[in-house]
Length: 299
Image (cartoon, rainbow, N blue to C red; front, side, top):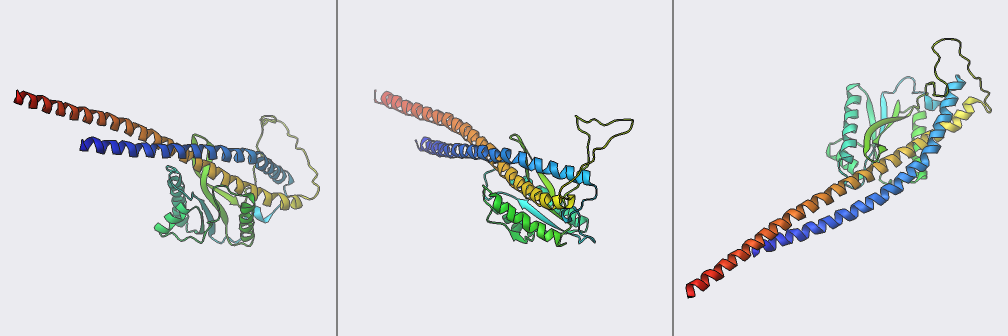
């Protein structure tokens, strides 16, 4: 009886865990749907801004801007921003981001480059502290739902420091959201912005021979003035999109991890129930044998 009581207690504990993980899965699913909606809503605007900058940079030819050029001479120093989560129970989400970050750190050191490190998320900060990697700033005020005003303030700070010539580049290490079944850790450079190259589209296929006609544009105001307005906005929207993608990837990872935990708890519960039934049947059989033996000895 003592063994069956122990197994019954384990079944009850596994059932409680299963209810908790199922609830966390439902919460993660709801948050994922809300976060994916924000990503989908911001994508058209950020894409159109990038297209405008691409067209302006490729057509103007002479337009320049400090955000498009690295400091001269190079400083040999870079600013890295690592985006992680504040909470755990999200599978390998943080491990994959931090693995990509450590790999990038090693590549910079091997190239003789230095870097300043800024971290978002308690998990990333705890890892850097454990690995004794110096962190210049911990951005603790960023939560799961990031407001555009917070990202705008951060982007303006980055652009100010970059234009002052403190860094050769500013890069973000985060989990890029490709689809609900695929998230990839990436190292993306946001400054200096790369001038996009002109590529033929499906509407205008590349000609193998013959003269080509280029359309000349007249800009009003001047290209430099347009870039001065569009480039900062592009940096802000792209950084905001990166934060949103990292948030969506975190919710997907937590949703997947909690589903796996719920399924595992269900399997353990079934195995314990089978074990409990066998132990209970064994105890009943033993009691029956004792009763039969006692009756036989009396008679």
